Length: 388
Image (cartoon, rainbow, N blue to C red; front, side, top):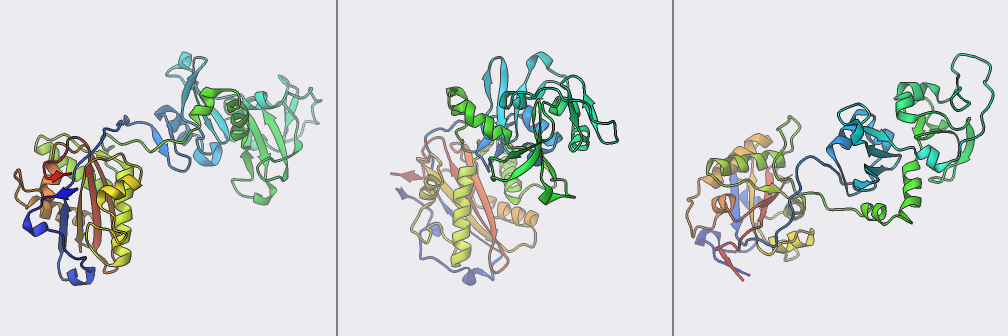
């Protein structure tokens, strides 16, 4: 692809960062342009990069409120509809949304994996009434070792009734034998190697075990277990004090586009991944240019990261500011100080071009302490500043 640029931005030999240390800001722009359209996911679901799955907002909120990863593990499927329920499998549980209980505390419930996994044992006699033991007449079983955990972490609503007494069972995950007890909604395990910690009692990996069985005969459940790419964020969530520098820059660019009557750019994690690859390359190899040490162009890096891109562009910069907010302010001011007009395919043009609908951003810190940034643009119509 041949790219027309103003003379100041013609390609040249790679330049070392050392040669630029005396400058406060150095920015170069490469114009290409974008692509085959990609679906923009609505804001709301939470993406878990560890397993490649989204959770609907209602499930993500329940997950957060009741112990998160420590209690339920990570999601191992997407959410899907079946038998009138919205279902999602986690490593240690199955979440179910019951619309009949909408807007009540029982709208989200844990599936009865204990009952599905193991037939209830015959009732046992009550133990001698002693502190720390409770007998459940409904199923005829005692709870002692796990009673504190059961009581303090949701009790009947979370775990249901006991289906067995305490038993010793070999764990499928590590091959070790533990004392466990089955309840209607899960299996509690005692891990003596973690005695005295908050992980001494755990929900077993019953979600993984049950889902493995289910997906073998249920194609809908099996399809839901396929990992997906992180969704493109159509708009930034509310600003928080913990925002990354990349999110702050995204907000800054979209705020400027809004002032100029231009639609906002969606944040694409795959383009950000490509930007991060180039930032790491520039820092590791002490240069500041669009062509990577492997000969890659911005569009090549985006495609390698998995983004569907036909046209693309990139802004890169180095800003020797002490803090992220100042770096963002200076970079943005420098770019926007460039003249803006059709035919001037520079940083300012990249930021305002209506044909772009996606952006990816990455920052890193160079050996000289300066901020190095790459931001990739993609989408929409072919940029007039580029030809094939």
